[in-house]
Image 1 (cartoon, rainbow, N blue to C red):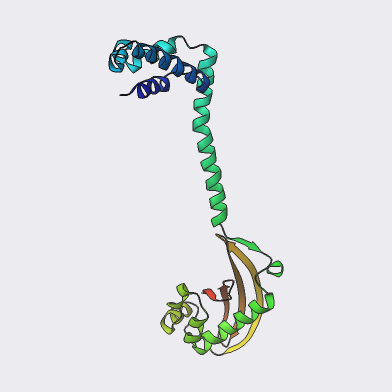
Image 2 (cartoon, rainbow, N blue to C red):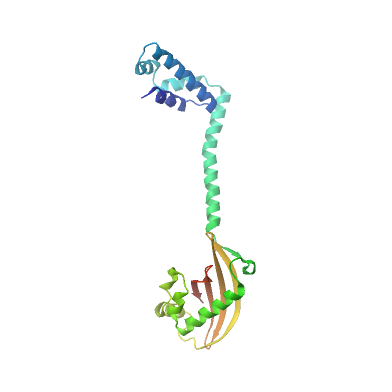
Length: 215
């Protein structure tokens, strides 16, 4: 163990403020350096001075109450501040992940008329079974779901026989922001001969299909 390591280890065990620790470290280093300059070996000096614990305990016995209180307060702050910081970061991160909905009419990325037209086109392509075209206009993660088998599986819980499409109904839409990404999310009611279906369709900023839900 070097002299610096020895002195630092002692200082770390002394219950006082940072300024007081610096003062004690300087005092110890000065005493040891003087003895070394007088011809003593560093290891002999450290052995004669005593163990790290013995010296630290000796200093702690003479630390004033005010210094000990300051030490305890600073130690508590070192624990509390990182915990509070971590908690705040978690809150910010959680807020970042939570989807937030905004009026699409005020969006910088989407035009309500364009989104409605895209929604109707998506429904028409689904009804016509034009899955290749749907895949061309979809994000990569959606392509594997845009096929006859997957779409029929999504339709079957509603009804086995929808009949022909008759008309489009009410449209509702909003801009959704999640993890810094912007999406247009809309719901459109579509009347078929035998059922009325609500489509929930999601598009990214490039107006690529990013989600389909039917109920």
